[in-house]
Amino acid sequence: MSIIKIHAREILDSRGNPTVEVDLYTAKGRFRAAVPSGASTGIHEALELRDGDKSRYLGKGTLKAVDHVNKDIAAKLIEKKFSVVDQEKIDKFMLELDGTENKSLELLKSAIEKAGYPDKIIIGMDVAASEFYKAGKYDLDFKSPDDPARYITGDQLGDLYKSFIKGYPVQSIEDPFDQDDWAAWSKFTAAVDIQVVGDDLTVTNPKRIQQAVEKKACNCLLLKVNQIGSVTESIKACKLAQSNGWGVMVSHRSGETEDTFIADLVVGLCTGQIKTGAPCRSERLAKYNQLMRALVREVTRNPMVMQFLCGDGRTFQKDNHLCSTPPIRPL
Image (spheres, one colour):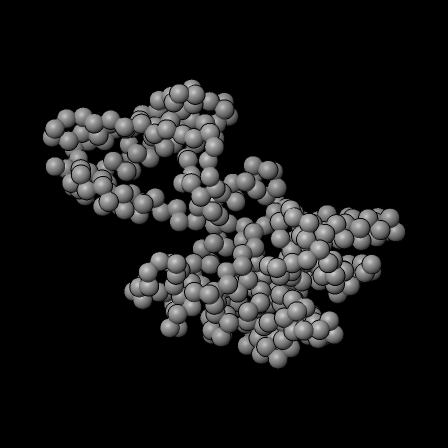
């Protein structure tokens, strides 16, 4: 028994907010369902499509969703002649129709725009691709049961990143490929105009950095002091990267302490970039507070510092040369 007709309309839920109701027709008659909406939603829930028109239901209208059902989804479902009781096939088909695989990026982009900072906030990604590199290819669904048929090549993964760059304000990608997939690194870095960061690729090791320079594999070093083992070696790694036109991003580790040395290192080495987590939890905030102390001190000495730092919010990737903040003395 297949679907004959589908028609969607906007109705109101129990709170007076718009939602979607759909009538589905088969040879046995009409069947109806409506969509509820939760007040408390988890971050991993599917996204709701709201109109965003503040003049109507404070932007909560669902006419866009209704239009999608009536103009796109209905015709394609009817054309497929699915059995109305084959729920799994119908759901899978609609997920393919959805096409919004990048829901997290869409959410970030929307949040940035709604906050009013589209020219100030950009997106950086830490892919850690070595974690899902298998048999010379990449398994993006590596947490599911293993299936080599779904593996993709480095070129395919690179194309995926390029689609992110084209559709979203992605300006920095860390470890986009396996630590020894040099060909993929070099090809991708040559093809994009963003910051490509080497962490597992370079491990703050001058020998690996030099190899990456020669192969033009990336254009930014992720600097982790305990990766190489000493402050002196870390400084040498930083200088090697900077002397080759790379950017340098000083990084924390996942198991951090309240020590603020890496904040001073950012200032002393003039890297302009730090990766130390969200502004919550004391071991992360300690670094930001130390940077704020340095900034206040320098602004007191030279007000032009603040004018420089409050530019477009981007401290890297200008004409393929990575620039940094002005030299601020370490504490």
